[in-house]
Image 1 (tube, rainbow, N blue to C red):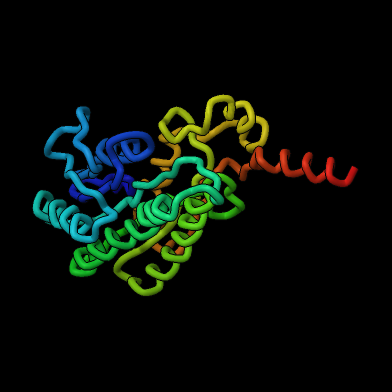
Image 2 (cartoon, rainbow, N blue to C red):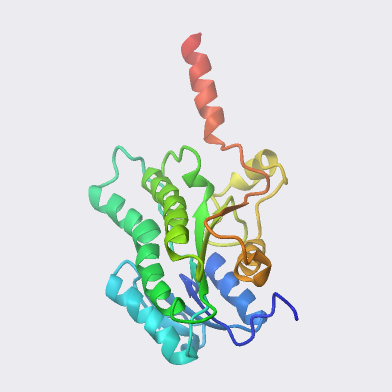
Amino acid sequence: MDPLDFAGRAVVVTGGTRGIGAVIASAFRSAGADVLVCARTSPSAVPPGDFFPADVRDPAQASALVAAAVTRFGRLDVLINNAGGSPSVPAGTASPRLHAKIIELNLIAPLHVSQAANTVMRAQSTGGVILMIGSVSGTRPSPGTAAYGAAKAGLHHLTTSLAAEWAPLVRVNNLVVGPVGASPETPVPGAAATIDRTVPMGRAASPGEVASACLLLASPLAGYITGASLAVHGGGEWPAYLADLRDTAYRAEK
């Protein structure tokens, strides 16, 4: 039996209509799963039966998303909390409303959807798997995206807490994702050369490599892994902003 065969299993991917989320959804479909994706606006490329409109920052809509998956598929086996992101805004000038919205999307929304999913999964004899799409921004300083980095750091703690509360039926893990190329999450223009120079693997990840990590953690191959953070960052980045800080400190000393 192929442990990466997801035939007969139901998967929900938040923010699954574009970028990394769309690639994750496609990977699970290719592995045989029934997949439901959500976003706030209806996409043109996703079949209507595979899409549910939802703003997962709203707990009622998060619950409706999970209920829709159960109605369509009769079960829910895997939840990928992928919806997230942030514009680059200095913390000193960003509005309180923007900070709140960023934290809602990247931390509170995954909690809403996970709560609803857990209720379904723990009623199944086979339980289920919840995966958080985290970021290296939550493991080091994140100038320009401070609220985002703080939310992703909180997502790591949320993962460990839910894993402890919901075991053994529901496994909860976090992917610490570094720079990703060929997607809307690609860094600002000109950053590719910096990534190639500062990431040990010499390049950004492809969205497909993030999707492959999701398949692994959702599969029986990871059956004893819960409360863990899997680094998908090519060996770790040396953030470009550190060079600016170093140069500034050096000039100050002179």
